[in-house]
Amino acid sequence: MSVALVALSHSPLIGLNDPAQEVLDEVDHAVAGARAFVQEYDPELVVLFAPDHYNGFFYGKMPPFALATGALAVGDFGSAEGEILVDHEAADAIAKGVLERDIDLTISARMVVDHGFVQPLEMLFGGIQSVPTVPVFVNGVAAPLGPVRRIRQFGKALGEAAARLDKRVLFLASGGLSHDPPVPILEGAPPRVAEALILGNPPTPEQRARGEQRVVQSGIDLAAGTSTRKPLNPVWDNEVLDIVASGDIEQFDGWTNEFFEAQGGGSSHEVRTWIAAYAALAATGSYELQSRYYRAIPEWVAGFAVTTAK
Ligand SMILES: O=C(O)/C=C/c1cccc(O)c1O
Ligand SMILES: [Fe+2]
Image (cartoon, rainbow, N blue to C red; front, side, top):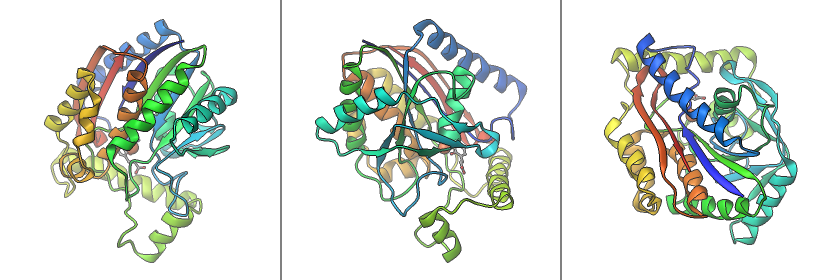
């Protein structure tokens, strides 16, 4: 058994509302570094922690986290659509190991996922059928959220369970850091929106296109300085990165959900994917960061970071 980690931000606006070429080159360089790290490590299994953006998980039943034994990508924002290559046997073994460690885990035999899962697989592995994966949903948008320590405890239990597999495992986190895109909120939503958030009826192509255009516009506004939403917060983002670099991720236990939101905006809870993945990595021993990249990219509505660790 061995373990390694890549954590990176995602944005559905990549390729749809891009920053200047020099920024794109910088990001490409950071992602290429992560890709080289992964190629050298040559994982036999990827445990992928990612959020959902009301494409697969709805208020009809909203778990704090869930593990997939099978998964289907919806193809939002031009991301790949179809079945993800899931290692069913490994997923089953990890699920049992987490449950044995007193964490009540939701299982999905056909998890519906979106760009949050697909983008890192495309960026690092060239597609969603390239590497055996165990997809793990981490709720990062749908209030109420439990305390941050709970997601760390879940990550730790999962790391211990994954360590029992005789495999080279890569923990891969997708999300964050500070960002406040126009993701809908159930409380106070008009009845039609509330129904969609609860029932999750698939949107018509026109509805999906309108929703995606609203997100694109939020990137245009943020970059132009005309947005009414929370700005990106590079100082807070670097605090997050300092904590993961320190190896002492229990420091996150002292951060309230209100603090996350005030500092990093409504979708900064996606950092939970990082906390779970780093806790999984730390479960079997101390680790060291191998690389760290950060840039606030308003065009993508993303405090955008890439880290590798082992
Ligand atoms: O509305 C969505 O589906 C997602 C929006 C978004 C925008 C920028 C960065 C992210 O992580 C997002 O989820
Ligand atoms: Fe997201």
